[in-house]
Image (cartoon, rainbow, N blue to C red; front, side, top):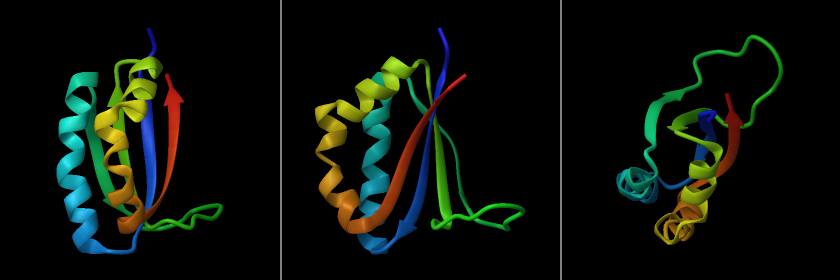
Length: 95
């Protein structure tokens, strides 16, 4: 079974809402065996373009787990907060 990595490209619009959202995401990841690999801020550009200065990478044990997490009631309940807090592009990659 291949692991999956969720990559979130982020532009924060409301830091208070973003902090609330970030504090609540980990509890939604636990049932899916997922873990945050890293969070970071753009340090430089070597090629191409990006519209988001921040990033998060989350590892899941499988694509099915990533899909299940995203569709879960627990995560879906956070979407209104996320949408107020930031512009986010979420991508899923399998290894």
